[in-house]
Image (tube, rainbow, N blue to C red; front, side, top):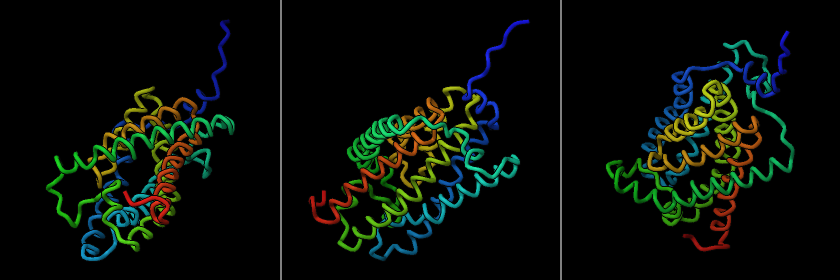
Length: 263
């Protein structure tokens, strides 16, 4: 009788994880972004004559739209799959890879995300926005990067700073990473490495409020997704994504408190 090689822990985890179709993966990845878009449009219209910056409206749409919809879809799917109500069942790729490896990979992924989302995007997004999305009305158009900060007064800066810390990092960043890389990426693992670019493309397209940022969201999500896929560890994705957002928030902190001039 031929001897069988025992499967690796990673193989057993993937085998026990439900395999979703590409269509189902796409619908789940895009749904929170669609809800967030419509909520953003409604809030932007209601607050069109106020001093509230559009970026603050974005964070409100994440808080009351994208985040709760993401958690609802995760919990509903878990119940339909009759899986145990546990972190391990909801996020199958929770392999512990050690503190040093998590920190080192997280720092590298955070810097990579910064280069894409805050570096390349800061240079290219205004150009793309003016070239392809100039038709969006002023009350709806979202300004990002240094241009957005330079138009705000003190109250607007403080509000944006507070929301970017509490909602951007604590709610949006955590929820996005757990949902897209922790929950959905493992359910597409039957696609092999194709699961990573698929996840990144759909993650980028889900940012419907800022379509000019799709190439840069895709680059960052590819980095985070590849690391999570490689290590089967959502810890790495959280470290990279939240690390990037924290670095961006610290840069904003320096601007808000006058340590550096407004760009």
